[in-house]
Structure formats: structure tokens, C-alpha cells
Length: 505
Image (cartoon, rainbow, N blue to C red; front, side):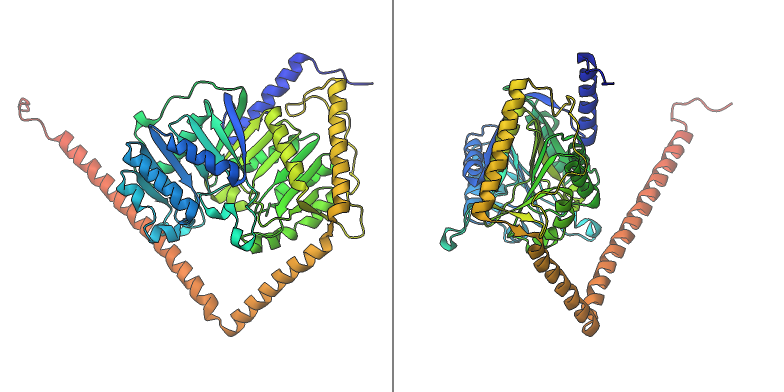
């Protein structure tokens, strides 16, 4: 007996439930009426940033993890200073750890000298020693409250590559936002700005811009301990019906997310993960390779970027939903940092990002299981899918077209494997495990022969943590004493009769 087809009313109810789940997981509402433009690599992003900043007339808000003292960083700093001299309200919030050299050498002083404002997020302090791991990892630029830029790129010439050494530009993705969602970007900046000092004046928070397009999106500005993006990533891994294609620069996902990816692949979803082969943080790439085998066994396809660095953080599900931003698939981004991402629910934009993902695979090497099939067989085939938020119903012609596109992608992958070749996971695991093993052996030898190398950092960490906790306790005692004195003064004032009060009888 077959189940009845869903009615329009039941389908709408499911859509409402799904939208509620997305909103609660992300902690951000779905905002319509926007124009969203994908920007690929520094060739698209950097000129767009400079053009928008040069045209600013009212305000420029920049929240950036790395703002480097190199050619591009100096150029953008000078442009911000020029706009500040022209009367534009310029505010720059940079992360202290990401910009510690620039902070110490006074790289940002020209902006302040021109009338702009700069703040460093979470600089070292005795009272904040326990929170040094929490960083402002956002990459956000808002101009005049009408246009915003979000993505994975920082202000650094590193993304342009090194022509002298033949280094190609880094692979990365960002977006340009226009429309009502820009107000959410302003509010996200205002929250971070207030975390480092006096808040923005209330009259500088503009109303939502007028609609300029038809794209619905969410701006997800996460803060430490909220885990909004992790919940949304898990939800998408559960909702995906056909495809889930991921790009990540520093992949060290927790067991919960790895299990979600494995379950999706075993359920027939085409799950693909693109990560860098050579990374600017080499040990993260080493750890990432130790996570390949369980994913491959479940049917997830893993690719390593052949260029110098793949820094993008993107996801595309079912050609209907996409995410672009600063959040990596690891604990640091999900739990400890301030991050900002844009989740887009639009088939046209998701299609663009899916096409770019397939193009990126042409410059990548697939990791396969040695002695196994390139693509393990799914544990259980997926039954005929019912319409969902991410996979609405299609006409026979649309289904045939989608099938043709998927078949073409598979043929392209097969042809690419013949041309480029593949690399077995055993080879990747050998180097990764050897590196990790030698590291711990070396660490053990250092601990055995030079125990002070371990004792000294532990003593320093204990001193900083103990000092910070003690200082906090002292401040709480002082606050409690001030409150008691204030309460006593209030009671005393209430007990004294006014001068013109009649005498007591």
C-alpha cells in the first residue's frame, strides 16, 4: 500500500517547520529581498572591496582577523585613512593575535591620525588569560550600511600568491551583499565593537536598506559558546537529499559531524569534501589526513587541492542551499571564535557555487582507498525522495535534465581521474601518522631529558589562570562591598526626616 502524495498544505507545513529549524539552529532569521554576488579569489574580492571603500560617503566598518602590513594591506590602510580625512566614519576592529606584529609596530596609527577609530580584539591581559584561545576570526566589511562583504579572505597580499617564486594565488570565496540583510551585518559588527569598548552610537545603526533583489539569506554571526554554525552544519548534513559538497581550509571536524557526513553518504547522498594538500598551517593538514579513512569507507569522496592553498569555507546542498563565510569545520571555529557566514537559499546562486566546486575538482586529486572501489557501495539505497525544503518536486523534464548534469559530472570525474590520477589513502596516512608519531616521540624525549621545558609552561599557565581567577574574585568582593555600602547609604537617607518635616508627636 503506497502512502498518499503530500498535499500543498502539508508541504507548506513541512517548509514552515524546516524554516523554524534553520532559524533556531543558526540563531538568525531568513531575510528576503537581497542581491548576493559570489566573488572568487582575490581577483574578484580585492577590487570590489577597494571600489566600495573608495566610494564610501558615510561609514566604513571593517572587522578582520588578519590585516597585514604588506603591499595590499598598506594600500587598503591608506585608503581607509584617506576616507577618514574626507569625513567618513571609519572603524577598524582587528584581532590582536592575527595582527600582533602590526599592532606592536603601529601599523594602524595612520587611520587614527586621520580621524578613524581602531580597536584590537582580545589583547593579552592578566584578567583575560583564560580566554586567549577565543579569537575574532571574522572577515567582514560594511560600507555606508548598504553593501557588505563576507567570506574567507583576509586583508593580505598572501592571497595574491608569490610571483617571484611561481606561487599561484590562493583559492578562496566571498560574497557581496546588498539589501535588507546588510543591517544584520552592521549589527554583527556593532556587537563585536561593543565587546572591545564603548558601543556604537544608537543613531549610527541604520534602518534595513530597501529590497534590491529576490535572494533569501541568513547572516550568521557566531560568538564563543553559541555553536550556531555547528548546529546548522549538522542540520544541513541531515537535510541533504542528493548532494552535499564541502570546501574547507582547516578540516578537523568532531565525531558528531563526521558521523553526520558518514550517515548522509551511506544513505545515498553524494558527499564530497575538498581540502588543501599543502597548507599554510601544515600540522592541520597532517591531522586532517588521519580522518579520511572512515569517511571514505562510508562513501564520502575526498579531494586535495593541487594548488598552493585552498582557503575557502563553502557548502552546497542539493543545488538549493549554500554557505559562504569564515567558519571552518573544526572546534575552534564552531565553539571558540567569533565568525560570520552567509547561508543562501537560492537555486541560481547555489548552482553557481556547485559549478565552481566541480571546476575546482579539476585542479584536485581524489583520495581513494587502496585495494577498494573508488566509491564504496552505499549501505542502503535511498528510496524515492519526497519534496522537502532543499529538494522540491521537479517535472519529468527537470528531473531528466538534473540526471544528465549529474551523469556529465560523473563522466567528468572519471575522465579527470584518468588524466590526473588518484592517490590512495594509505599513502596520505603513512606520512600523517609518521609525522604525528615522531612529534610525540620527540615530545616524550624532551619531557624525559628536559622536564623544565614542560614544567615551566605549566607553571606559567597555572600562574596566569590562578592570577586571573583571583583577580576576578577580588573584583567581585569589591563590587559586593560597594553594593552593600550603597544599600546602607540608601537606607540611612530614607531614615533621616527632611528639614521641613513636622516634629514627631
